[in-house]
Structure formats: C-alpha cells, structure tokens
Length: 323
Image 1 (cartoon, helix red, strand yellow):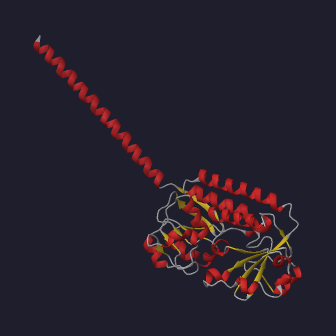
Image 2 (image 1 turned 30 degrees about the horizontal axis):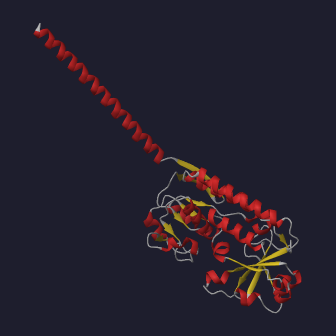
C-alpha cells in the first residue's frame, strides 16, 4: 500500500513539473514574441513625399539634425530630442537653449559641416529652402526631408509639414491640437482685420535698401491668411521681395507699415528705424499715426513655419491691430 501511494505521489509530482515546464516555455515564447514585436516597431518606416524627393524615414528616428529654426521650434514644442543644430547662424532667442554644448554644431544654415553631421550618424535630417543646393550631399549621409513652407499656400503647406512631423514622431494628436489652437487664434485675428479700412505695406529693410512684399510672397500671410488688406496688390511675389524706393512708399501711402529688419539678425546691428523713418516716410499716414510696426525679425526672417513661430506671428499682428 505504501509503495502504491509513493508511486502515485511520484507520478503526480512528475506531471506537475512537466506542466510547469510547458508554462515556462509558453511564457518564454510570449516574451520572445514581445521582443520581436518591439524590434518590428523600432524598425518601422514611412515614405515621405516632399518637394525634392520621396524619402523613406524611420519612425521615431534618433540623432535628428535640424537646419530650420521653424522646424526646430516645432520639435521643441513636441518634446522631440534633437542632436544637431545650425549653431553657426544666429539662433533666435526663444530657442536659446539650443546654443548649448548639449547640441552638436552642424554649421550654418547655408554651409553645413558635413563631417560633424556624419559623426552624429543621424537617422533624419530636416531642411528647408536655404539647404536645397546641398540636398544630395546631405541625403548621402542620412534620410533628408525638405519641409519648406510655400508662401502661395502658407497655411496648407504649414499644416502638411506639421502633419509629416507628427507622423514621423508619433505626435499626431499633439500636432492636431496645436494647429487647432493656431487656427482659432487666426479666426479671432481675422474678425479684427475684416472690418478694417486701413491698408498695409510690408517691407524688408537691409542696410539702406528696402524690398516690398505683397500677397503670396514670403511675408504674404499677413494679407492672405491674417486678412490685412494690402496697399498694393501688384507687388511681385518673389523670394527676395520687390526692390522699391522710399518714393514708392510715399506714393502708396500705407496706413500701416510693417518692417522686418534683416540687418538686426544678420549683422547684429539694428538700423531699420534710422533708415525707414526718413523725411519722405514722415509724409505717410503710417508715420503720422504712429503705425510703423517693427516686426520681430528673429521670427519673420530667421524662423517661421513652426508651431511656436506661427503662433507668435499671429500674436504680433493681432497686437499691431489693437492700436
């Protein structure tokens, strides 16, 4: 009898151990499946169609290199880590943290440091118009995506760019929320501008020269998106604006004169006020009514087209219409 009971106990113990072994195998198998799934997720890619090419990009890429300050402020708002920034150019003050040694200096906006970029081993390089001439060289180092804003369709192209960023970095929801906030601010701004009779002129001041910008131009969103009426609808829509004289400004006599001071951000010396507010311009309604508005050149000239910078643009124009 005792032998029989002993046999039964040994048999049950053996069955129990076999069952445990199978469970461990199942558990290990599940763990391996989880690991394999994580590997699949980490190597997932998407194809990004942009103006210069169609580029295959890894989802949530590491060691991201950014050549555009608008795209940089977008990544900053979305809490996306960046490895390299164009520190040799003048980084806007609102992005001052990117001047630190925590970020690699990849050269200037127009002269990349290819060796430094290769050393970083980026999985993504983001560029805009200033880097189009070196697109091929950058593409040889890493997947390079062009996300420049099209002035002729500013908001549409801006939103498309932001959606690409959202898809690459799994930030679709955050991007959608930020865009909705900006669009709500624009609606409020247009409520002000639509009832205005005043007309505006936008000029870029560069040392002692000025260029005018109208609808569909670099700063055309002031008219096309924000609804401020242009004093001259026939301004040529070119990248560098239409070269004009101060006689032209007097002849068109704008109610509001918006000034972007290029020298302030390129040379570090602001000369626009002395250049613009001369004897001729003193004859305009803008001067007489204290409606010459000096826009922040760090946003309008160096940056723009980002989730933070576009919001700042809206706020600046809205404030100018409260006078």
